Amino acid sequence: SKKKAFTKYAKKWTNEKKQIEAEFARIAKYCAVVRVLAHSQVSLVKLGPKKAHLMEIQVNGGSVADKVAFARARLEQPVAIKEVLRVNEMIDAIAITKGHGYEGVTHRWGVRRLPRKTHRGLRKVACIGAWHPSRVMFSVARAGQNGYHHRTELNKKVYLLGNGSDPKSGTTETDI
Image 1 (cartoon, rainbow, N blue to C red):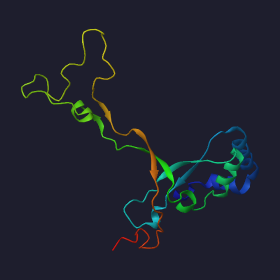
Image 2 (cartoon, helix red, strand yellow; image 1 turned 180 degrees about the vertical axis):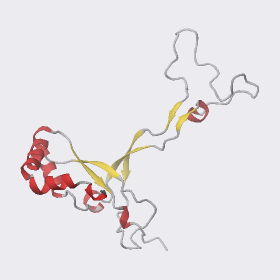
Image 3 (tube, helix red, strand yellow; image 1 turned 135 degrees about the vertical axis):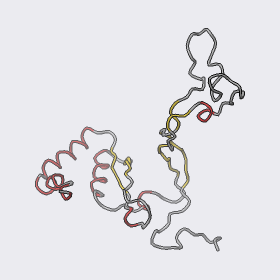
Image 4 (cartoon, rainbow, N blue to C red; image 1 turned 90 degrees about the horizontal axis):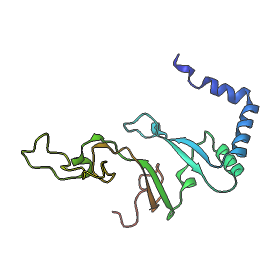
């Protein structure tokens, strides 16, 4: 039946408290980095997507035991953006770029097209290297995967933290 999802997990939280305490103690003892899995509440926003966004967030500050206690206190609780970010704070954004699949060299690297009457295609690299060294150098443009790469943008500044329930929360004094 469809109602069986997470039933064993829910039983674990009601019946086997010792096992869960042991898991948290094990994390505090052996782990160096503590991360939590968080998801958005798309049901509150009456827009297109129905599936929640899932993200992994690293917990920083204090000892590992403090990090575990902090994460455990917020387990299955809503986290407001003002608890996480502050105005004028510098943050790093980590994401995956938009995927474009397998692309040729003309679109992937922006190399120039060959003349119109070229034999065996014109959206190619004319010469991929000299006879010797008898291998293709890493710097030569080749066809392959374009996009869907892991990227980190450093030093993004938080200018404003709005309140989602207030329609005027994203405005400033200079807005009309």
